[in-house]
Length: 280
Ligand code: SAM
Image (tube, rainbow, N blue to C red):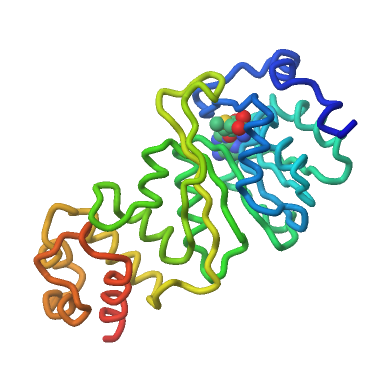
């Protein structure tokens, strides 16, 4: 009998520990262990990795990560009601699960992790996007993580993998695709969760590239992209006026038409513009 077979079904765990879902914590739980194991498999080979899981809740994905062979899982969970359920999982997998109670936005998990590190999470939308942006913009590259396997509402997932020319293409796509490969690897209907959310969800898998796809200074790139997409309907010569007085010349030097709008410019173009602006 494997360790996972000694643990009760997640519905029983929720009943035993009184884990009624709280909207304020974005709690939509995954209770199907076949599904959570499938999500864990999207994270790649875990056997030689530490996995950082944010928001384990009753531990469905945690069980998936452990049953798929993760060397060690470090969980950060804000809801103290979940800790006894997670302690049962830690007992079933001795020495392989550490749980920290707290807010993932405030805890630095790195001192508890040994590389190589992968990240996996099914998080509330607002926390997930904020953490993703932080993970994509560390002070140095490559980052602490090899890959991120994250559940988002479908609309956010589409913004992460968006291509130029699409309505969803913007800052998130550029941040994600500049230094990582980003793919949607699973789609989940609302009914996969308890309680079901209003919208469908997608799992996005991001793999860190050893180096950025195109050279650019991160701060300059970030400033230009933010300015360009803040006024995405305007032509770049207008939306970027505040970035440099001679922006039309700079755009042309970077191979971009000043009359283009932000969503028409590929990642390579924004990087060329950032280099052009950093040159003086
Ligand atoms: N991973 C579980 C699953 O798939 O069933 C739970 C997912 S539920 C969508 C989100 C989880 O994140 C909840 O357990 C919630 O308590 C937790 N959470 C919400 N905000 C958090 C934060 N700032 N830091 C850590 N955990 C948080």
